[in-house]
Amino acid sequence: MDRISEIYNAVLDGNAPATKAGVEAALGEGLAPEVILKQGLIAAMGEVGRLFEANEYFVPEMLVSARAMQGGLALLKPLLAEAGATPAGKVIIGTVKGDLHDIGKNLVAMMLEGSGFEVVDLGTDVSPDKFVNAVVEHRPHLIGMSALLTTTMPSMGATVKALQEAGLRDKVKVMIGGAPVTVAYSNQIGADGYSPDASSAVRLAKSLAGADCRAFPNLEAASLRVPHAAWAACGWATSSLHRHCERVGPQRGAAVGVQRSNLRVGHTAPRLLRTNRSP
Image 1 (cartoon, helix red, strand yellow):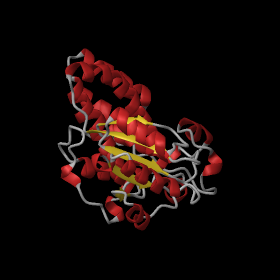
Image 2 (cartoon, one colour; image 1 turned 180 degrees about the horizontal axis):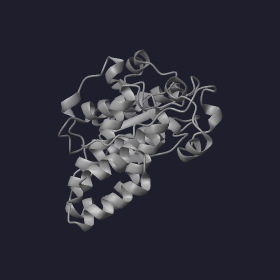
Image 3 (cartoon, helix red, strand yellow; image 1 turned 30 degrees about the horizontal axis):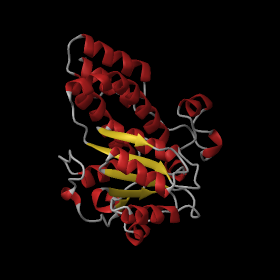
């Protein structure tokens, strides 16, 4: 098996040590960092997203694969910067003011990073002003907002309004998501899209940023809202654990940072597909 296939399969299996070792070996053999990134890490995360949508992978599998990918990406980042590699786009992401939930938001951030985006994670309890200041500082293509509580959803609308008042709304696309959020609410507050899960969030981000979006604020490739949930932005909430996860064992739960109490009880652990695949 070649090095790229080793990296690809290690990410699919959520094997962080093997992913890191594969990237180090590939670099030692002279493979270009961008080739390792695109054909190994990004390709594998694309397959993880496909398996999730096919109900073959669940949120725990996505988390461990994303974390394995991040370990390899950390080795490549300085080399990619030296080579002048251009990311697919820049995304600012955060859970809105008053909301401290972050499992789903973190998953979306990792999936976006694994798809070639530069991600600036503002964390939780992010106020409209903090989002506005981040847009001024980082000049992103996209903003992603997550909320798990109905009581914090209005902060999404307040952030869109704050962007408008700051004269920045036409310079950045806005994606929203979370358990209580709907595509109707996205349209109501003037966001550019919504999605029910991390995998479709990646697709939406690519659609909004445009295939060749490189310079702020050149976003003409995606100027309309996305009206359908299949292309909507970020259902990044913990509720997806209840929709898609079966119970995991204590070691696997700890590995992905998920409390067993957050998962449905009384089911067997979801299977991981261990067969070797080539990218």
